[in-house]
Image (tube, rainbow, N blue to C red; front, side):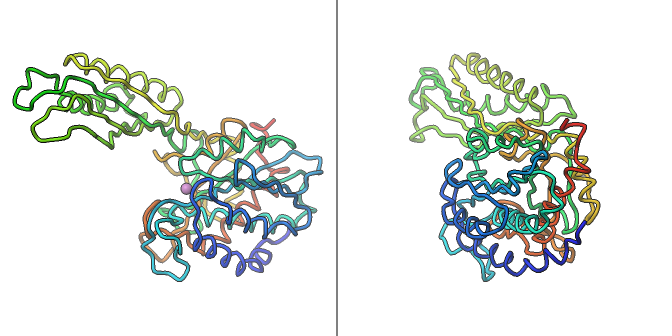
Length: 396
Ligand code: NI
């Protein structure tokens, strides 16, 4: 196999410049027009690559070696930024007020562009096609689901898919892997508590929805503490409470919203049922009602054991793979993982000489340039070793 480092090093100045440009011009979910144009600009003249644009709105699918006979492997990057005002003072800070790449998707795009450029030079090592998925709207917009609906895993059919996320708690050179449920299902909870409004000095003439809502908020935590197996994981967070108009009026309605996180599909369904029961029956105990609505968000991201073991072996060639615990954050890569064997891994971005690094979604997070060659190399190795060393057991 060809030595990768010289190929990556020759591209590195351009890749760093690309990341800085993306970081300066962040775009929110489904608005990634300039980002997509930059990706097309980088890849349209690369020999062997065909491009499909406008996928799921602003997505780009690049296919290398579409006519090769072997099985197809897919690599994915997300493109969208977040509605946060950047706090950093580096030269490539965001030029757009109120928007920034606080989740490092600028780094993910850069690593995947670099991987496509390197793999195009390794054509003779590839036995099948490689698809590069640049998807919109990871941050709440379920861009991955739309990508699946628009057939990105078909024609040629994808045998396995891999993705990475910059991980600020891991140092550069480490790759965090976890087989099974790695990132949580993420669903939105709405509860409307309805009672009877009254003068605040005559509580017996109303049904106090503030008191009922308080009991529901407390009782919901019993689902985590008493209805969930101690070694399973559930989060039920009530993050918004809206009710009332004045100090001397008991409101007739209180609205609660929140989020539900789980690491197993079965736990997710059970938790939904517990929430319905606890909210409606608690309200009934006080003579009130509670209407519960749960909006389906992202499913649990299930890393395929065979695909994950494969990434661990691949990463060990150049980096240090480490086992990491699941995280209760969500990730729409989960939709691909529902369709084909998949593994999503954590790429260390913290410089080795630093003890701490800003975390994801913080206003001073910046995907570190030092992680770019590592991300490119990991993507390239996952693709080029796939045919000989791939996760055959689970891909058969
Ligand atoms: Ni992210």
